[in-house]
Length: 443
Image (tube, rainbow, N blue to C red; front, side):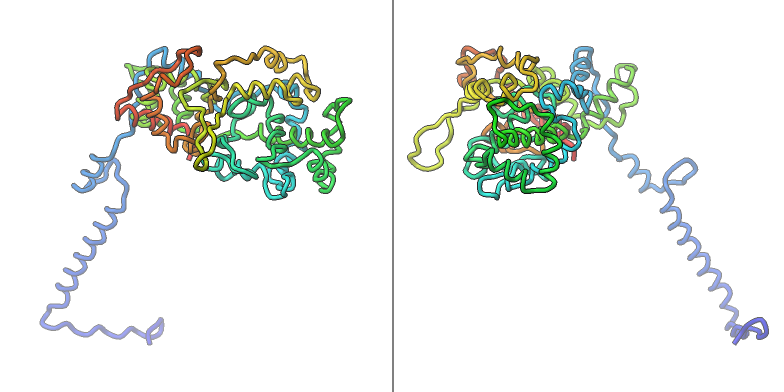
């Protein structure tokens, strides 16, 4: 043994004097290898001696896309596509449409009712059956399936606050009235006012919330207590759904940076690391210019919320051989529905039957040109809402782009606005526009 009191054993003598030189040579080789390994781990920077391989790697590192030069008109249009989140309506304006808007107890109740299948006729279908939260409140199908197969695509529920019309045909003029139709429709949820009332009474939390919230809803003289419960449930659903807002996107980052920087030498300072690729920026230029897409898909939500004929056939495909031809009149039917709806903003359940929404409704006229018109959807989170169009007829965004590129003008109304023309896009323009539309979605 060795230690403080025991000297270590002596090393064996080397033979022929070769031990020391061989040991020193091995030590030098090991030291050189160690130093080379340490250098490889060091980050590049001033004072670092780079190897040829490291120099080649740095030389070929891709550079971030530089921003395009945008003229005054383009900058003004880009400005109009934000900010996001957009400015919200005041609480007073929202409660003039829905007296439960902004009330925390109503929002909690609405969120719970949204996923409650007890409201349906068979106790198995809820709002979330079609508007799946994990799918950004769509279902990924061409057309919805409730208690029966339906004819229209499930729209997303994001970013509905402040809109004037709801549904592909605009058959409702408030978010809460739009919630009543699927609750009662025999093909969707197949519920009733009586069933909603029973559910609210049977559940302790629901019953307590209903008792606290009903005084905010003026009950018409001809309305039953069961109908009062139905309207309360719909208004609670609307109060929750108006809180659903999509997140910011790469385009929003680009827009804000673009407008915050000063032009310098034709380029925009501070945007060397643009969040939009060169292709996406070219696509944005197409969107604002040749495509004229922002005429309908304008504003922070990328929609003006109105209705247009875009050359999509309103004849419904047969579901079985020999089925009689069917049509979906679109906005024409929607206007008929909203004008006759007991729950519209000019009706007995409206909190402000003489207000701005009621006046808008009274000014809405049914015209032949409304046949086959559909609501212009938001383009936000577009990547997550396939398939597209009111009947899910286009499986991909590229199909949508090609629809507008090769638009059949003979399908458009002769008495409508001459807004659409075939874009005749090249393959590169299609790719660029697709890249821009993709920038309107978050991961």
